[in-house]
Length: 299
Ligand SMILES: NC(=O)c1ccc[n+]([C@@H]2O[C@H](COP(=O)([O-])OP(=O)(O)OC[C@H]3O[C@@H](n4cnc5c(N)ncnc54)[C@H](OP(=O)(O)O)[C@@H]3O)[C@@H](O)[C@H]2O)c1
Image (tube, rainbow, N blue to C red; front, side):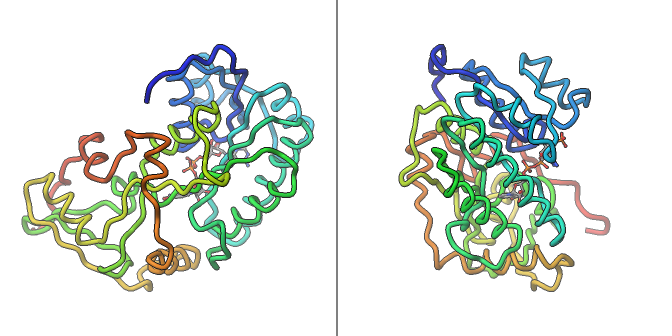
């Protein structure tokens, strides 16, 4: 990503700066020497203090305190926000409250440009509660009168380093997901979410139609397993699991929607037109230095 001069650009406000996606936005904004104000719940927390140590202004906010939000968004040039993870219907309602409060505050402060970190598929009703919540926030933004750009990330590649990590069994790299073997999973690296959002915040790029699906690769389970196997110098094997392995209703709804993704083709060229260095999965594996895990006991 080429650094651009940001001397004429004012402060960019970021909600979620202590988290994964907001953190990636901060990284990319700092790469461009932009001035950043992070909206944080607790300025004394370790992650907030780490931001301050990098020259970022901290604005203490509470979602249920409009005055704190108004002060935090005063005189900013642009505002990025994401909404927190929801693992239950109650948390989905809380997510909508967070998003709605941030939209209302941005409208009251007349922020010139808002970039909302939504989710892929939020342009339609999906039946996935924590995706339809983001659709509701998008709709609220649409009525706000604000200039808005939606970034809609697909699954994080970083999931392959945590909840979706492939294992090493009997000399093979084995990946198991509750996704049919012939369905491609759409994915993006968190680094690239930050880079694309930053290009939009700094107005060095525009999203066609005001929204961009963030997808860096789309691969079936067997091809994902093969990519990790190739890196390890081992065969890769994929095993499709039934949805019933998921204990959470929201996750089941989400993977059911992933399986329908072939009905909604992605255009990978759009993201690369904004961030040419967007990683595909092989690039992400290389960039993160992924190595095969230790063999499971008995294999
Ligand atoms: N996992 C995936 O593959 C995937 C794909 C697409 C979209 N998503 C969506 O991405 C979102 C999660 O993003 P992430 O992983 O970047 O989040 P994260 O790392 O968990 O960070 C959450 C951020 O939100 C802040 N926050 C949470 N609740 C808050 C509140 N009530 N008031 C103020 N600040 C609050 C946290 O600040 P503190 O420092 O105060 O805790 C933190 O900065 C979810 O909405 C999820 O549905 C996930």
